[in-house]
Length: 102
Image (cartoon, rainbow, N blue to C red):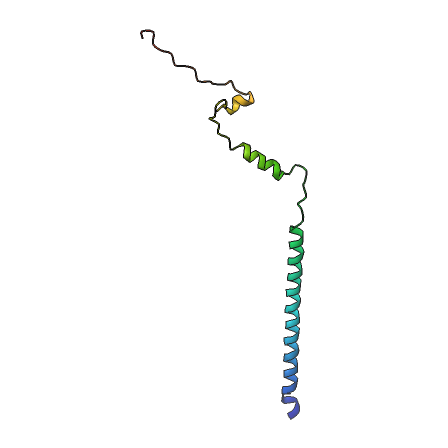
């Protein structure tokens, strides 16, 4: 009965070492999975983007941004966007009438 009541220190040490090994192997496995997934995602991001139907194209959007930087008050440019589209008549400034007495 004395043997069953006493714990074997060698056996406890072996179990502790085994538990530490299992924990370290698990940690290494998780780190390996994270590293592989990061590598896969970085390779996928470096591929050329797929152009979907109806998606904006970068070169067209860049050209639109360039054309929108023009000054609308330049000579010959209208400031009436609705008149440019033909929706509303152009409201060109008319000369102010001078009084007849002058």
